[in-house]
Length: 96
Image 1 (tube, rainbow, N blue to C red):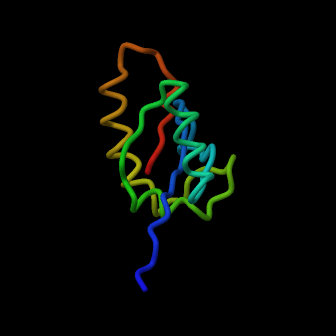
Image 2: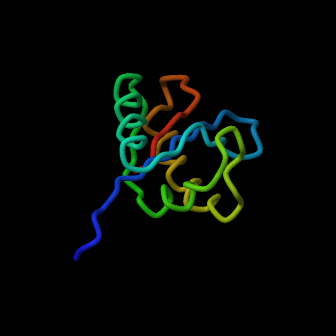
């Protein structure tokens, strides 16, 4: 029997001069769907990166993301920063 795919989501926020992005929420399955729904309502940037979402699933909300995630997050953050440069946002984003 094939294993059923369960959606994963991880929400992070970064505001300079923080030393690293902070994990706001993470979830699998229904929790992930709720995180996605709330992100859509709030106008938060959603980026599909299942690898990063999986790496963040065991990080405690409120903690900085771990160093081994920094390179992947930095690439995505630079893209989001460029998109939101004029918005003055705190750069919240969701990874699926």
